Image 1 (cartoon, rainbow, N blue to C red):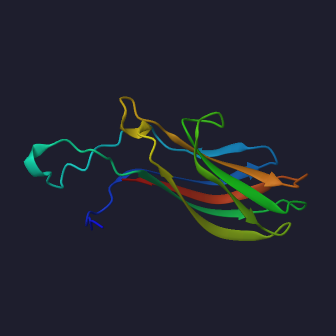
Image 2 (tube, rainbow, N blue to C red; image 1 turned 90 degrees about the vertical axis):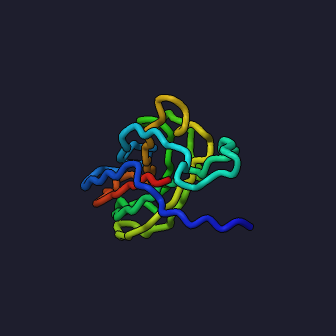
Length: 147
């Protein structure tokens, strides 16, 4: 095992409040387009190029109120802007009673290499509700992209 002591760099941070989250997957918040880099501050013996690149982490903090008929909600992270991009990591399902509120934290890892390609990528956090005939509300959301 190799221990690497390096502070993560924030590539982007966005925050928002007061979004409706209906049953269908809905884009709640997206980041700016980010271009990740290689960890150049760690010396490489012999000047060889980096063989692997550390994944990008997308850290999400969310306060949500379930709709009056909902039973759970599903959070996804997608590359790009909107609901059509490639999903990053698994969908995360959180059980929350109807009309209840909760504060939750999620971490997604993008090890696809896309953030390191020319042009980079943005990330979109989406929410859908299970069993909801009345939309819930994302009361507050913070998204931080770090590498």
